[in-house]
Every structure is written in C-alpha cells, then in structure tokens.
Image (tube, rainbow, N blue to C red):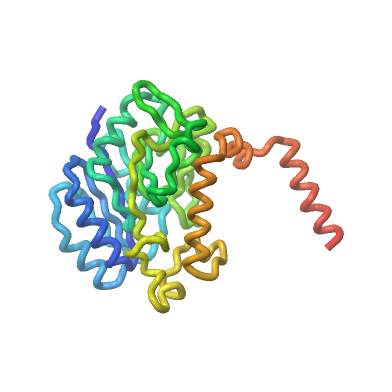
Length: 278
C-alpha cells in the first residue's frame, strides 16, 4: 500500500486563514500530496494560492465559481494519487506529523475507517469520560466516534469512494460517516489524542467572527444554519458538541441516524397528525 497520503484543501475568500494553515502545513515534516481547490475567491486569496510554493503541491484548481464542497471532493477522489486520502480545511492547523501518523494508522488494519484530529479545545478532551468508547484495533487505541467531521482526516480512498454520495446540493463534504460506522468500520481519534487548532472557532484568538462587524460578515455556515445570534452562543454550542462526542455511545448515534421501523412510523404519524390539526 502507498502510505503517502493525498490531502485536499478547499478555500473561498479566506486569505487570512489559508495563509496561516498553509504556512503550518508547509512546516510539517511529513511526506504527502497536496491538492488545492479555490472556489472563485477574491484576488488576495487567489494570488496567495497561485504563488504558494511547496514541492508537495500536486495540483491547484482555480475554479470559475463557488462550487461548494461536493464537486471538488468528487474531483479529488477521481484524480488523486495513492491509496490513502483525506481533507484539511483552510482554517485548521493539525499537530506536527499528522499526515504520516494518520496514514500509518489507516493502513494498519482493514477495519479502520476514518482517522481525524480533535478540533475542539484541548481542555474539552477528557479521556476518563471518553473511556467507554476507546477501542483497540490491531495495535492502535482509538477513541471511536460515529464521525470525525470533514475538517482534518484521512481514510482509504476506496472506502471514501464507496461512502461519498453524489449530492451536489449540499454544502458540506459529502461523506456518509455514519454509513461507514454502520458497515462495521471503526472511525475516530487515535490515542494519544491529536489536537488540531480550529482558527474559525469563536474561542480562538484568530477567529474573524469576534471582530467588530465580524459576526455579520464572517459567521460560519454551521452558525448561520442554526440561527445563532453571536459568536458566544456559537462557541457554547461547540463546547456542548464536544461533550456529546465524548458521552454519546455509538449505539445512540446509530439509532439517531438510522431509527427503527417503529420510530420511523411514529415520526411519520406525528407529522401527519400535526398537519391534520394545524
């Protein structure tokens, strides 16, 4: 198996973030193949990407419009090299050596799904609280979760091709994380836990949302989708999400994603009654 991972970074009008992320990744000693897709950004972002120099860059796509996440992701799966691939968002800085570490773990056992980095605050990680979901797969201890998010992860290319549905209308990276878990693969975070810095977390000093007027101009899509009123409320939600990741069992996550036939019937019936009595 080719252990040199291919990594996709997608950006759009984020010169400030992509500059920090790129400089951090360039300093990483790992060997990897880097693919960069620009979604018709402003001149500052495009200029930075065009002039970025690193021998590990394989391809830069300067797209003519904002294609969101799905088209670049499927293009990447069809065109990247090697057996292991994944994604690094333009606002994430991973721990040194993460590409090689994640790739070696993915290759170590065929039942390992996606391996990701902890993008919450370091103090939100609690190994004691996480103990009920820590598994040993081969020689690797993994804090298992139903998903690892689309920020920083690696997996087998064949597995990602199998579980990346073609849903071009969605904003996020089109990966069926829970489908991978339901199929019996173990996704999650290797131990010792790899801490990754999310520059767009409102608790980060780098977050653009905290500046005067920044919330209206730069609020994250996940924050807008949930109708949060400001960065503090959004940050509280991220903290609660970290707690859920630690405490929810895999069975609970699967039931939420794949409710039983009875539960599906109950929900449909409830919706029908609501329409009747509205």
